Image (cartoon, rainbow, N blue to C red; front, side, top):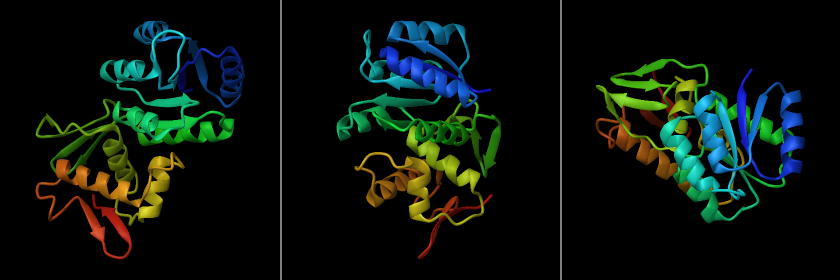
Length: 223
């Protein structure tokens, strides 16, 4: 059973969402502010954090940053702030997904399961040539040196790993990674992240050997 920490100060949301997630098979613990959340995380193990940006004590951005630097577990933002700035800020701090209130509970469950799969919750090491991807620590390294992938670059790499030797269209990549996230997500965004990922994992980004372009179709990772 996956364990989730819900960091939210709205009692109605806490009660309703906790009850729903319990019915869906998740073990849920609650915190109403930043200090309480970090204290609970220091004493318990969780598979994912659901985090509101506006908290009674502290704020979601600072809490996300602290969680990512200390625990390396996936974070999904729950917030009424649907503006582009908040969304981008959340992702840059390492958030793994973002869903605006009001949201459909079943859509949230779908997002949770998708993130748990993309972040390699089952753990293990995948070798891509001389690159090692550690899905427990959520890192990628070459010759023992961290490649310092951003959260989205890492997720993109995991999508390719989970679909190795398969051509992935740009549309499928966008749907898989962003799962109907904010309006700012577009085809140009995907181009930027593929370029950034190649710059970190390819020995020669101009002649990629790991993530290959299949002209007229999409991209493929050969293992």
